[in-house]
Image (cartoon, rainbow, N blue to C red):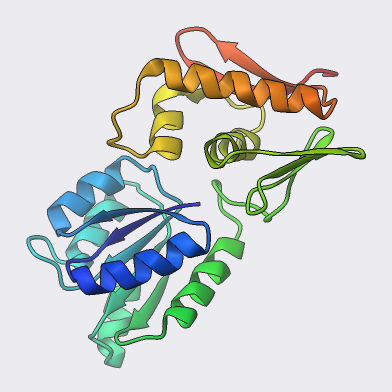
Length: 226
């Protein structure tokens, strides 16, 4: 799961960043509203942690602009403004949840887990079942019948997005953004290498699933028996 945190307090970023990384999440950071909107437009994240009071564009304005542009990424707003009317304004601006500073990191993690359980186009159950395989993104394990194998973090991130969009062709740009980050400098060959690794993993557990190359576009996972 890739999380974007838009927050200008470096100490808070360090504390939350450590906790999220420890829990196995991938985190991208930015510190201003204007920069945050550009990151949001990439739609490369599963969840956004958004500070309300930011340099440049404030969090409420940023979120309203994002929602008007059709960006549906779930947002958890973090702020020291905790009056009822302020909470209502934050939620009405498009936030999916709202937490008041100071807060316990344990509560933030619980809210993230709760949001992750909600059905969304990018999300599903923790264990993904497609065709003849079961994949656990948190454990990075792939099972087919009685055979299983472990994946590296990058392999797991790539297989997760492919399985969550089973049968759909995902453009290369989408895979780069979701797996490496929207502004990561990655050579094209890296994606081909990891697609090769995924195919080997599927073969190693005896799966009939195929990672299909759609030339000039991207990749998708299909069931070989269909």
